[in-house]
Length: 324
Image (cartoon, rainbow, N blue to C red; front, side):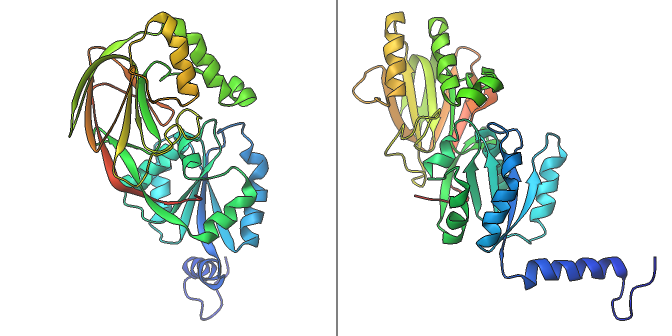
């Protein structure tokens, strides 16, 4: 290779420096990392990437794509990118599981740039609870408006964070036992069909919940720990939920007779949670959950650990773009 022209110094370093200067300093654009899961939802992202970049570019936003991949190097690659201090913000496009993964990378590593969570999966409970939309035309305006909140996060056993919800018992494993093809064809309704099919097989378990304010021991069929308004694709499941109050909402569904299960299922779908003595609702900053059985939990739509658990509300947890 020919030597560089006089005055350019070492070839590789100067080419890199000149390029970075042009892209990241001379161009007066916001710079964002676009993190996406190619398998989320109906795999439509592969047909929309160019449209996304075009809309953002027209609005003065420069995006660099980052494709999530399943091995240990994904986190390391993300951290290397963020340590470069090049980006003003990041976007994650995917389902609740993708959101959970990226949120954990951010919080555990103290990444403090704003994160935009745009829905691309089946439920997208948390992203929709902060007003995010899957309409690509809206994304540049949301970013450019700069409306940002520090939202709460849940922390399980001092190890895993969650933004939306965690649950155990009836319906808790529906999301990871529902076929991808069915989800692709009918969306969140696939979960409800699968849940309805499981009603005759529902089993109860004893649950002990201890918070800073109370102790509860009940035989239950389902428990939820919620951060946000939406659960299982149900908008405004908790209309008064506040993602900035430093509290988690805990809901216990007590054991029900077989004939009552269908009515309870309908109550859940219709968000009618008040005035029923089979439903207990409390709020807490810190709680411990134990059971007499091995109960697996669901964390932001993905398979989680087994009880017992220690869950805390981290306030504030994450710096997010919001649209409500």
